[in-house]
Length: 471
Image (cartoon, rainbow, N blue to C red; front, side, top):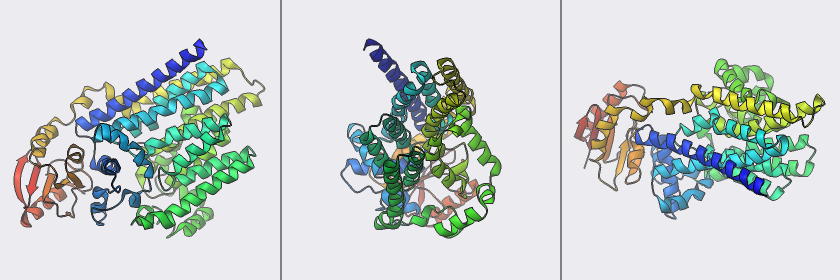
């Protein structure tokens, strides 16, 4: 019993250290004006609304889509799981709270990964695999991108995998239902879990899981998002394959290679290699990888480059699945070569997996933590922005350049400054630093000039940062 408690302590410590690392990186980005309106402000507005027992309006998205400030976040992405974070806002009402909550959720997957691996490979190997997850590049890129609903997926995936391994079906289904509350396309990952269960001939739970996933996917897109005031085609990224699901499926089956690699082939191959290499390719030997394929194909088939590039946060959707599949793949490989339970080989693989994860650190976001420039940020931007923000009174509606929104969202209603203004009385613009969604600095300067022609007056200007006001 004392030995078990000791290991619980070390696993908890690893999770705590990981949480601190993730929080630190995210909070530094927030403090140095690297966080953005899209997406941090969107979810800050959503969770604050839940915390105030209000409908989850996301004015930043509503204005961006020209659908009004009373636009439900559920109409944009069906993510009711954000309501679970409302109690944290009762303690500290700030976008920083979301950054810390994200860190906690990402780190919370570690104990379940450890338990799953310990049952298969032993305690020592479980530590190596847990470290591999903690410093993995998909997690690094997730932490480096404000916050996103993907923050819920690693821990829920880990719970589902570990609880199924333990034959605790209540925990398994609780995690599956949790995944369905994360986003409208999580039904695809749930279907993937069902396909994995089919390979285990667990017909009852496989059919239940596949049925739940398909029902959720169809119900949310056809009924719930439209009922909330949204349009399911907002995120349709397959126009090059067809106008609807049936046309897309037909195009994929008629020429699957062209559909997958017709554009961006090099980046897609790079991402796929980076996803499987951290397990030394052994995830490819496990049918558990089936759970990751629907999400992966959903992204690879799209026409949106960020969805399938390695530089963004979307790969965190499947990092836990592939890592656990690597563990299962090793067990299968050792069984095939008639060396099941060989602790030396298991420990060797687990150690190599941890080393591979560490060797990838310099290529991705955690590498910033050893650079002094990361902590300085854009000092000119900060020097100009801080007095500019002081010009904006509390409680107003303000259109802010993308990087300025998080600094205003806890005391104003923030909208994204864009080429088509929303008519807010206050605007915080920038004419010297390009930012989304403008095409160029010239567009930003031209928009400021246009606003002044429409009756806005400058109340502040410094190093390209401009505050405009129209009574």
